[in-house]
Amino acid sequence: MTNVSPQESLSKSPPATPQSVVLAKAKRILEQHKLEIAKDWLTRLVDELDDLEALEQFPTQESIRASLGLIEGLAQSLVDEEALKQFEEGGVYFQQAEAFGLMQPEGADAIVSLARSLGALEDAVWERLAANLRQQDADILRMARLIRQALHRVMAAATLAYHQQSKAELSRMAHTDPLTGLYNRRYWEPELARHVEIYKRYRRPFAILMIDFDNLKSINDTFGHAAGDTALAHLAAIMRSNIREVDIPCRYGGDEFLILMPEADGSAISLVGQRISQAVNNTRFRVGQTFTSLQVSFGVAACPDDGIDPDTLLKAADTRLYEAKQQKARRLGASAQAGV
Image (cartoon, rainbow, N blue to C red; front, side, top):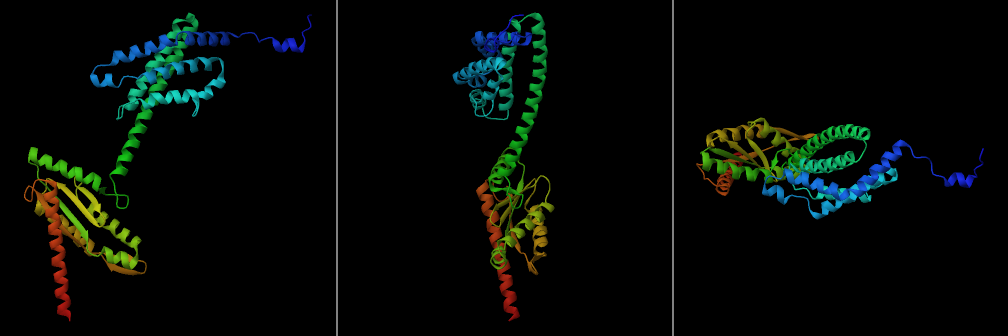
């Protein structure tokens, strides 16, 4: 029996296993053919281009350079699992992978486009490996590739759904007043302009209702702004309970509210204004241990009777709101004089 010194034992490399042989060969294939893989990837993408817009979104030199770097990273990971850490956040390959996301066009199709691009790159990698491995190894590779394709599609579908949900939530937050839950001015003004255009094209009438508190400042001054916020939320709840699904309620600013009612005229929306006003005016508003009353006034405008452009309609509703407030003030003044 031959004696082997500890130093000699440590200096000898462990025998290559079948797995390590395959991995080492795969590494050499990726390193030697990374340019061909990148070309295959580009060819797949070019074959899918069918219009000028798609051509303008074609991968740039930066994303091509990133693909070569990622192929090198894949090759190194086959024989050195420590290299996988470079694919984690902050790693070299992670930063190269970010280039693919940053190069995507904006819009709802960005994730689908990104998934398609990365899928084409992966297909090019798999096929180059399969073409240079033994048949038995290639069959195992094909099985792994089919599983990966299915899992990628699952990931793409889940990611797209999450993206759409997040986008919808961001849109809701951008167009909704956080206190009342009604639409805000940013959403409502384009809707008013859109309904004006609908009228001009299809002669579909609509009307708007403008509502304003008469005594919100008094409530804020007497009971504090928290009480004022509660009063605003209360008015919003009454508005929602008195309008249709198709109507568009809005907190326009401060204590001013608007409702757009498609397919309605001035008479119809005046009835809605009366119902909302009476419901609010009949409220005994509790603040701590005391009660106070809420008062609102409203003005209406109808398209086309009062105009066919947004500014004219808003001005007409505002004028009628002001007149309603003045009439109420005169009635209160007359009542006060009569009581003297």
